[in-house]
Image (cartoon, rainbow, N blue to C red; front, side, top):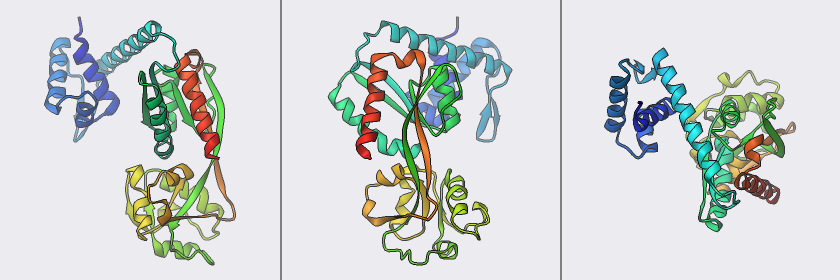
Length: 295
């Protein structure tokens, strides 16, 4: 019989694809994660990961074992859900959304948890495709995405429209703003920055030739830190409004409304069977109410 602890470690490692972050997630040491992996490989008699520098992929045997680990995890969650009293203030709710929206949403969720000591909320920042897949699989209870998925098992409710913002230092003079002046200031790049630039700048500057032509002043992948160099006058960036509103030094930033403004529709999604759970439904209502209050 497979060791449940080793299998969970292996499954989490494959989900995260990083030994140190896996150790942090499981409250283990990195050598402990490696030890669980070795013991599981000894138990099944085959290697379960193929290393390529700092990355790795599971071979066929590892993929088969990973599917078992994920299935077991899903079955255990379903059992806990069935055993748990259907109370809107008790249990765990797992939510996925973009990093910028998570910055704004998490304080709202903390306020909810302070009123409900037995409610546990697990908020995950993830790409849209991953959120949809994990909601469909039951690994997430709720998701916030930019398009309604065409999946029969998924419910999708319009949540709000979020503006894509050109974010500048507060002292920057936006009179007669040109792409050349923006380029002289420099772009603060981030994982979604190029896509946002292509979406917003291409519609507003005739001489825009693609994000790869922008002069990058700095690059960062920590969503909460993206506005920081802008606040200090080192460049400009493009973010959804939620990423701007969540920044503590909001007064050091300015949002310049370009002639052709861009908005993304946000949808709140859930799997139909889980949407009926009291805690999931109540949390969804709370998110909707918070967004409506935000305006």
